[in-house]
Image (cartoon, rainbow, N blue to C red):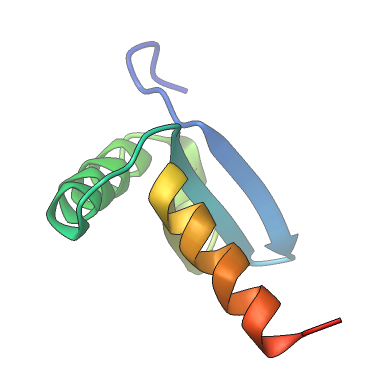
Length: 79
């Protein structure tokens, strides 16, 4: 796709569903994540995949969000 359009992660989840994500190995505030999410959606619009997938999930993976997910998973599935 576009030379100046960097997307960290793209995964096809099903025939018409795609996961598009930005990965940052630092703590981000909710506001920073929101800004990154808008930017990610904008970059995705520049790709040819925008025509091919009806359902697109956008995610921001950061050090803080991964920690939150791990804590939530651990509390839901204690060993």
